[in-house]
Length: 241
Image (cartoon, rainbow, N blue to C red; front, side):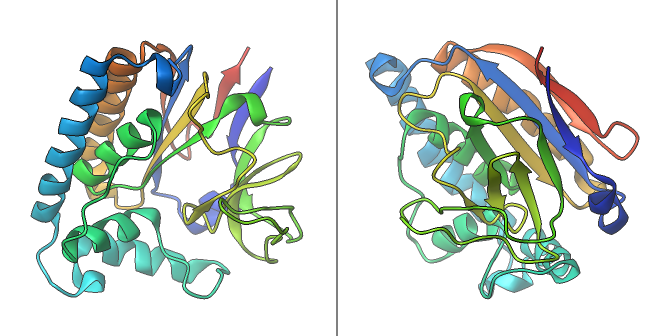
């Protein structure tokens, strides 16, 4: 059995955070997605870029509430210089008139949800995981090769990250994915994560979880093996039986 575990070191920093997780199995690879479904994903991505504008009330990215809560959260743990929540990076592109563009179907779908709800959303390939997946403060030194890079850039002592027995999966909570576990054109089984650090937005989180699961199922033909809300009172879930 393989589990996801949000460790006590995480809850000590963020006791009111909720994390939505969707486990999708049997996804179509990029070349198996029909032209009709690919066109639907493209339309939804265009629409989501437009929806994101509704969350931007200021031309200064850090002054928007959906970004400000994450800037504040990132002050609670050790980060790499310049590290920012993934949703800030997406919203910054929208603010600059540079819409988020297509990458691969599974990534496009989680970006659609992130833009639509202004919540950070990520995805990892379950078949790359080694042991349990944990979210917590690390002692540092976890192996990590970032997407697009070739050299190891290990975690820092006191950094919050997702990691398994082979090293870090995502650095600085939800800043940057690693090459080893990132979803690719050929990924079949996905571990999809949505994080909500603002307790007032848990209803948005729950809607986003349902939306994400529905899109992965309808556009990628996936079976939704699990759909869970992780909280301090429910800190673990089974990824693979």
